[in-house]
Amino acid sequence: AQSVTQLDSQVPVFEEAPVELRCNYSSSVSVYLFWYVQYPNQGLQLLLKYLSGSTLVKGINGFEAEFNKSQTSFHLRKPSVHISDTAEYFCAVIKGGTGGFKTIFGAGTRLFVKA
Amino acid sequence: DVKVTQSSRYLVKRTGEKVFLECVQDMDHENMFWYRQDPGLGLRLIYFSYDVKMKEKGDIPEGYSVSREKKERFSLILESASTNQTSMYLCASSFGLAGIADTQYFGPGTRLTVL
Image (cartoon, rainbow over all chains, first blue to last red; front, side, top):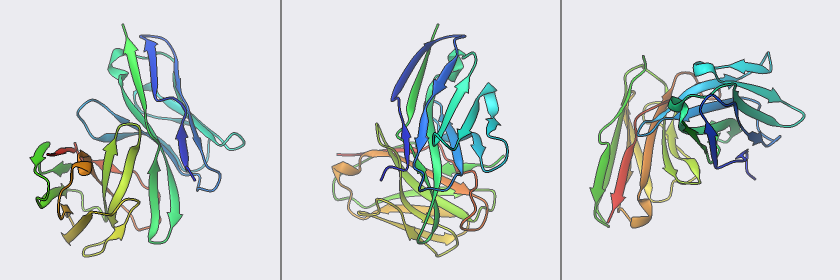
């Protein structure tokens, strides 16, 4: 069963507009949730993570995400995007099993910010 | 800053060749991972290691093997490269014992083309 689903493969948006990138996770996985960003020709880097505590998590570059247990969602938001936010964004969850815990990544959402 | 380096950014090999991808991290991390990244599929875990000389299969280990002789180095081996192994390969590392949800730090990736 899919553990994490990113609902949009591509999101085009104009500069300075708000954006939301959607992520839903399976209720069968643990609630350790991450968003990573991959800029062109680079590896992934952590934007933010939720392990416990406040459901609103703030990350780098003005991004934030809200953990919603009833909706099993962890959507990423930014109130005003810049051209430099153009990148691919990955939602990820931690899943336990034999051999320890593994990070399961979504398929990714490509954010295009247009001038 | 954590640094994860991969031996090559781009690699072109022929079908049937043995291919070595090297990854080195400089932060004394316990855990190391190899992923492949394909459009629309996100990142898929090939192998991971929680300690020297220890390895665990990920979700798609077929056609691959790994070696971890030293803590800082984790090698991915394609025993006999095939065209369906053309992909972007990402190495990652994280600090902490197995079972702890921790941030992964990624290398820049190796884009492998098998002809």
